[in-house]
Image (tube, rainbow, N blue to C red; front, side):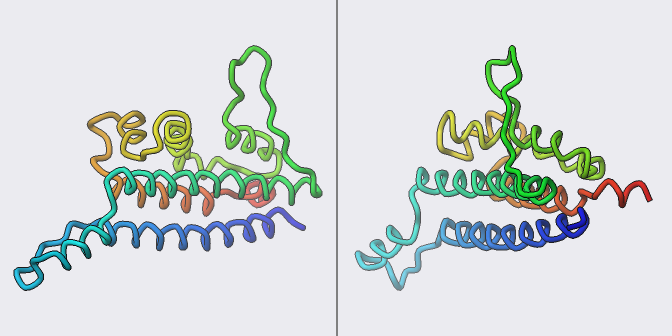
Amino acid sequence: MEAINVIQDVVGKVNEELRVLREDFDVLVKKTEKRKTSKLFKGIQFEFYLEKWNLSKKEKQARYANLTVQLYALVEQSLKDLYRELHNGTEFVPKKPKGLKKPENIIVQLQNALSSRINFEFATPYNIKDLADLRNEILHKEYSLKTAREKVFGKNGYKNNKTLFPDLLETVEEYFNNIQPKEAVAS
């Protein structure tokens, strides 16, 4: 299969998965919005409803973290799929360079391994390093997007997850929509 067809297939799947993640995000935002209490419904029954409807802050942060980890996994798995398709079914095996305490990010390794067939030059402005950094903070420190966001971007960065996550979705979408096969670039 030609590289252009493989890329189009993978990008189509990525866009569908991004649509699902965007829907999950929208549901999370809707379920965690603060609600005004109506004078008509003041009472035990309404309080029970509010308690059931609103997620705790910790649970909300965990759900945002989960969406971010899923987004990272989508990028990594999609690049692995590209590698497998372009290398006749061979699975990608990450390497740990000698002298390094930890291996280079798998997405970076995949980009390097795919660089002979795919041009990532046009995808570079949509660098997903921030996504990788957020994922690492979430998995290795505290399972909270808020905590990871503050660590990666600082206190003056994104103010909340409602603005950060849509930007991450857009970054991933633009990243995949801008990768090109080497032969398309050469012509």
